[in-house]
Length: 483
Image 1 (spheres, rainbow, N blue to C red):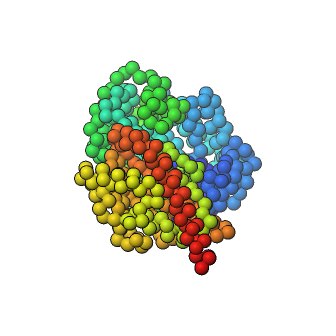
Image 2 (cartoon, rainbow, N blue to C red):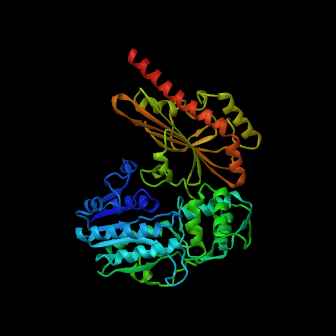
Image 3 (cartoon, rainbow, N blue to C red):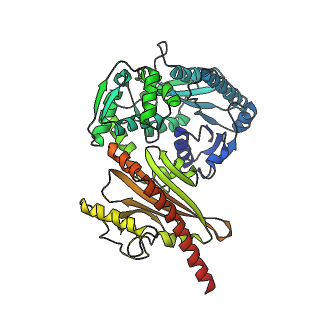
């Protein structure tokens, strides 16, 4: 089918589009800033437009069979509900005029008729506006989505990782029915095939009903962290949002509407989804959590979760936090072919060393050896050749594409997990873009202390390492030309 996806730059949409493409659908993505999707979804058509602009929406809807409406406002502004309703009306009007047969919408769980938070109420109102527009609408309502990168999940993740003792608001006792991201995507993709022409509202959730406190403690057990949660009734939603703001990277203006929703019990009461989608068996919380934390598992040509994430759109110089990872990214353009750049980064370590501050690299190896780690004793098997699984000093080759990509996983003793990735991207005129990214996933509070204590050294080492790789590649290329 011809499918339109709005919100493709978001968390759900960004994972949905590749699935639709693999299923053989012709996918068009509507985005306010089309450059954010440039090169991200091979085979998809990217059109620029805004759901506030009726003409751009009508143009995007032309020739479409099914549309996904994944646009939400996550704001503490007083008029966001009006904006949400207006955008939904604009979209469904354009969809009706274009003859779109079905709109698929993802909203939030919560019982109609009770005191819902403003944002949950707005989610339900958007669904109602879409259903009243003359197009068949399949609306899914979900609670917390368990997957790396989900705002709600990452908030829980940061709080649990950073606070050995949590003095928590009373909303941590609220019952919730979390659902795995895989199961959400399964419902969304199978909704295209759903028989029947009438609009439907489906409540979807995982196999377990838990409190938010239960979820955080389960996370701690899986990560082997000792955590204590003390519930106090004094936190207002505003105070809770500042608590989240101080402890996590999530700003208060985004945290407050989320927290207001956490006071509402969000449990599946209507089980029609199980009857109408019999192939989907939602997993339990422990399984969903394990999958979410398995960040380095490879998936098809996009070898890891961070290959398809916002890391691609980071500035050339970036040091900060994305999706629970500390990231240091450097880009340099070399006047040399990709093969020459790759030849340099795939020969790092061993007798050649690390091109910059070798004394510091050796000191880190000595510290690792002193505390029982592998240190620098292993070197490398070959001075220039690498294979999957090779040891490179205190790293291990986790991913390798000759002339293009090398990812090393740290095997030194660390309060977390670390990777160092190099990519060589061919440009015009015989040039190559080197993309060097260091990833660190901290474990507990000591992981954060470790990163921040060494941040100055990391910044200098990584910046100069990228520069030296480019310089070495250019020198090798000049020497080869002169022969």
